Length: 372
Image (cartoon, rainbow, N blue to C red):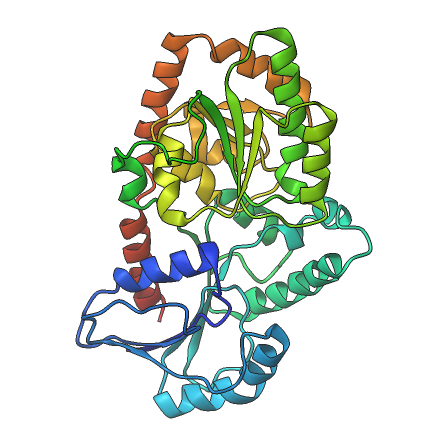
């Protein structure tokens, strides 16, 4: 079997991490060859005799150039390689495949399928981009031979919108790298010496950092809070500026740390040494950050919006991400209760065992072979 993986859109962050994990878990079978289309910044694992990178000379880091290349060049490449499967983990199949070649794609981005969240971007290029993505992903999923979802919630939502999906979908949630579960490193040197509450995520309108900051201010108003709040993640302006302005308005400059981007290898110890981890997102597909926080074995407070309860079960305390008052009240009930914190830590670590990165990758390769 010859599989072509089109991972040209995996240019940073979680997309590259996911593709790397998949390729690391590729079984070395004599009858399976994988040809990878990927950015130069994505290193391929060594020692895989059945894995080969296919170079692309076009400037495909530009998404518009990449779309043209896929439209004009991908199908002839598939034919020349004798591909049995085109696998598009980015969610969009940008070409019509040759006869005899099957297509497998994934659904990974929930925002384009949430009109409420799309409206929050106002009259911006981001809103137009999400509108276009919804149509491109809908078409790709409708025409694919198999669609991999990473949450039951997403499958329910999309199957109600795309009539040709039922019967060709499967759910394979993402998994967690063991480093998040096994880390024993001390907190990063730049982290505050005091206990801290941690929220790791890009600063964006649907991530609710504004509400988290307001909840922290309410918590400080009702108890002598010595803890700090860390918001760790890159800034997607102008929302990031609004968060900083709110921190200043509430007089929290000495209590809230905006870190900007944090190296991925620094995250395990940052999670592990938090007093409480928070995940306040309003819209997710498979919340990787939440899974990492669970694996750290620290108490977790999570958004009550789906699919967070699907992944957290009874191992998290849930709150309305639009209500700073509710988050502050629930924080106050656990932050000074060592028995409750210990119990939540135990449950978080136990729950994380359901999400193993290598098993998820192995299941993905098995599925592709089964469906062809």
